[in-house]
Length: 312
Length: 261
Image (cartoon, rainbow over all chains, first blue to last red; front, top):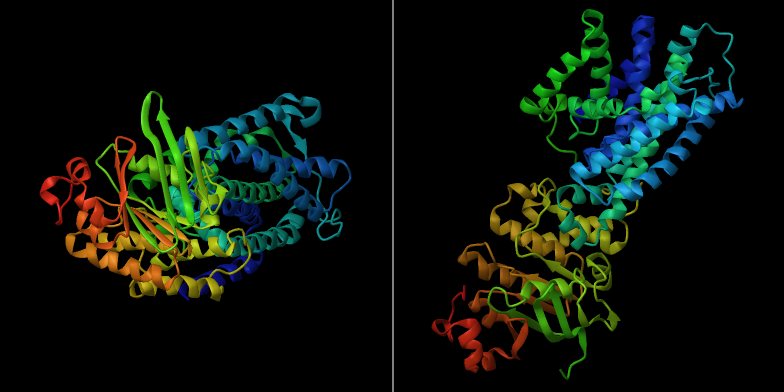
């Protein structure tokens, strides 16, 4: 009950924020919401299935570049872009997952990382197709079929685009909530806790891990598609392994044991990064220290301080 | 075996390199039987279980479950056919509650594991099925307790209960009372015999070291020794078999309780 109140208040806050916050801060909300979607997916794998992917930036990259390619091809509807990103994310995750889910722990993590690096190199080297290290431009997408080209860029981003992202985040959260509270979600948790026992109870461990991987890839790609338009540019660093590391960091920061923990982690990460960067250029140094502190002293992340210890 | 066998292993050999773990083991279990497999460490009990549960493929010989080839088909396929198992070392889901632990096999039995958008909480059939098993095993009061917080005896019970929740035809229990106190042993046995009757299980196979339990509950005892079946007979006949008593049970325990280890 308390959770619902907090959730309701958070939603109201997100709805009225454009009236209260400076455009600068609102622009930071955009990547937060995109990462929120990505993290919901990552955590299906991490918190619920017990697999830590160090290659999720691959799917984020796929989603982001989908937007770049489609807007260049004249397809600027964000609905179509998001849908296409979801499909491509699913296909990529299905293929990559086929190999990765046979392994667990560090082997799974390293294998996902390897695939991520392959894709990164592809983006970097196929200059003619991807623009290499300069990346690609993402043209302003149409929202619900509306062409808002006449709007100043910031007005577009902190207004219609903000609410669009919020809508996607809310839908993504609702869908993921449904998934983790479904029979399927329970099966994933049995796999996380004890694969040997899960198998003996008829849960096909490899197959379910693969399903979770594919779903996770879809969420990452959808979130990735939302990352491009605010900057108007996508580049290979989106698919770089340190980006995958940041995603894992966000999950740890917020607390992977809770449903909304990773989303909170994304929020804190974005704003903290901004705050630290405005003071010192070495934000990675500060974040490294924070990561160490979390792992040692607060393995439950921020949610660990006031939430139940495990998703249920 | 005059009775029709549900689970049947014939001339099973299993080699690990040069080591012969099973050397021509045949075993058939039919409806209404409670069969105990006994034998000293290294006799091949674990290998036999892994062969019977489809985890290991035998080097030679056949394993059939309900007249289907079941050699090496894996635990998931076998559960679907109607064979469940529990483990020697207690296997639980530490962060799942008792009722969640029991829901997992019920979901799997109902074929709803891939239902992505169905509400688990609102699935009355699954919830009732899980609660029913919890009640049978005396775990209903603790249904919202995370498994890791249960006392050892209850963990063991939950492990066995979750296998029962699959409503198998045959259940294979690998030392159902190992690791629990003597006082709890008979309580666990009583519960699972009652549960198997109520749930309509056709047969129970157990591997057990505790001769009290072996002789107290079995219709038939299969004694393994060095990968071979030394004897396959009624408890009374086993007790009278000097070779089995010598090699497997131990003379001190002839006719009375005791562990052979």
